[in-house]
Length: 595
Image (cartoon, rainbow, N blue to C red; front, side, top):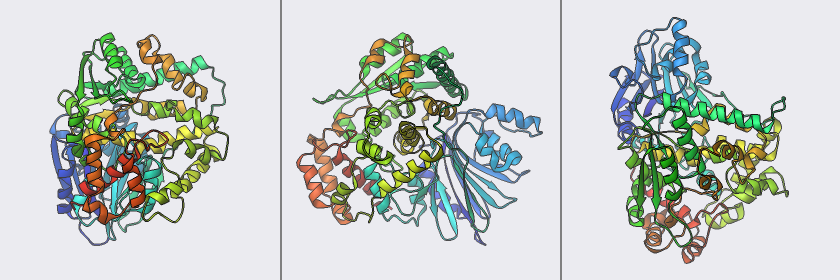
């Protein structure tokens, strides 16, 4: 796990190595163990390394092979790299390192761009082919690893976060009004390729981009999720067995591909608790587990220790729990926002940030339960959508999911786009799924969520907050083979039993009944949901600042309505609308106003 950066130019220009060097400090926390810079003609590549596999200098990056003329910077983990390496060795390739990075380099030499579809894992990389004078940029199927782009007239820059691109200089920081419409509709999700900034875009998950020496671009989608039932009839018990076997493989892969210990983030919910159980069954010894909790509010508990503690005791893990007072949440909140590559409304961002700080002092790699709710139908809004009958698929979805509909958006934004951008995007997305890749509305909902919405909500949040402390988070529930299998499974095995029915069947007997039978929990930070006291003062100061007034994103009447009743205005999925407004403005002050 690392941070990557670079520039590729066309025509007769030379890449600006100084600009790439300026990006590396913003990536240092992603890769605290080593750094490197390599430049040749039209390309300059930069890297910050977090050493997980092959801890020697042989695996340092940028990795250049003079024989093939290939240079690579890579962020991620390839879980099938040993099998690929063995195949490449049979084909005559010789390796000088033992990690997964060189497998990509040798794989490209053998299969060209076809290597991308052979990789099983999480990744974002840039590979320069000096003989063909072209650049390959690629991102994993589930979008677990980020890759941001800034195009210019004569070249393109790329990095693992937006902070690095902003530090490189010359980036257009004007706000994208269509992205803002998406941001406030989809609780901070801005689907690729957009971001809220006009000058920064991101590579779509499951895509690779080839850029030629003349600047010509070719974008290729190498994987699409199909949510359709197989032709053969499979009964419920066989589905359970197949899902369990696939999840076991996913956990085992993420334990084995590391030359350092692997821990688990244990929230106390079904998903992370099941990971602990399976990790121990798959041979993890002296497993370290970590939990975080916050102060209660009158409306909501702030910790789940009563559920995580019995799981840790049952599996005799080396368990640590962290209780964070509200005063610490507010004091550290600016740091968490500084770690965000894009604005994030999820109140648990600061939770992951503070937890990652503690965990990184003990391990470099953790498994985390993100993705289980989206893959296996765990959220309360899924059955509500399934029961909805009025309107088309887009109507049924947005009625239970959108934070704001287009009329409210026109009350919120001072300069809204001319049309209902989020509604149009949603209809296009469902049209593509309805045509040939989903058997039912709920199949389409879960496919859309796991391939698009989750990428820019919990997945990005976990990546940013853990990598802020050089901690690699691995997400077994987003193993693409498991996702494919679950997508083809009948919806009743997902939505049944109040959600995640098949996972509860797998967990029964492995976990305490209290964990399985409890109401669905989240990773709560109640003070950011029920806004009052010093948190309200913090948000008032941000939204009333000179910078906010001059920026003029929000209509004053809407803003005053929220400030008058700060703990009363919630979205359909129970997020604080005031926090959304304050977070975006604070993110802009933190990242854009400093440039």
